[in-house]
Length: 309
Ligand code: UDP
Image (cartoon, rainbow, N blue to C red; front, top):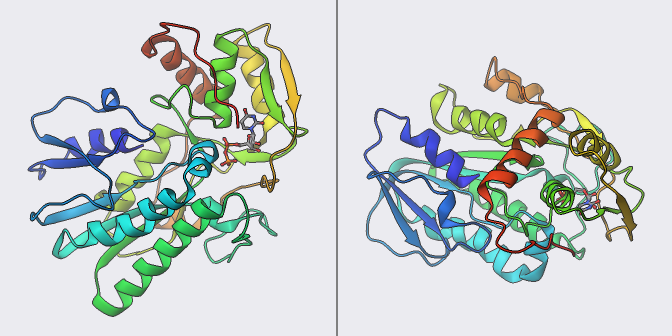
């Protein structure tokens, strides 16, 4: 997501330079485009040090895949909360701060679709809590700071996203399924596959983020749902991949604990704040584009193992 957002930033006429801060925990430097206006700093968001002040800061630093954030829950909370605290310190007076929160703040939702004013049902002792609560706490801090200091914030809540530059060992459904399909392995469905998500394609999501964070003239601080509001069960994602890659097989595994059964954004507000924006790329096209990328861009030096829990 970060590398895609950087490419949008490079299109800005007013851009002097970008400092990209990334510890490469779940990403790769190869994803980042080469450009003289980019300075790359390999560092944690929460400890990155500089005396510079920035006009705009976009905080996307956090693993987003359950497989990765569950391995290092404390570090995930730190990346979000302490990352925001540390980065805010680098914002010049009057600057803007954008944060990517998550649909996970809604937990196992009691209503569908989920509007921004739905308060959610996150279990703070559950297996996803480090991510969900790390995002929630960062949101709370940003809204408090806006109230007390007037700092300009933008809080986006991203629903599921897939697309090029995801890692082979990411562990989320789309990269797992596509790598399994490409390597002739069975696609692993956790539970019965009837659980659903609203699968957005990265270009659509980054379009919305760029418009919300800097392109459009509005003063809405958030939270703003961003995603694709077509909700599709996991089993149908697998069937769609079966149409693109004939001959796949499927293996059912135990359901994940507290796996949300459904998730769908209410995009009424996004359509009002970003008039004309729509998620235009449907699941099948998004999967085809992502599959092409996995085929072409990954160096299959050895058969990669898709991630398991
Ligand atoms: N999932 C699956 N097989 C996999 C990976 C994920 O069936 O190999 C399911 C997972 O249980 C969940 C859905 O796909 O219900 C989406 O999982 P993902 O990790 O992509 O996103 P999240 O659960 O964070 O929305």
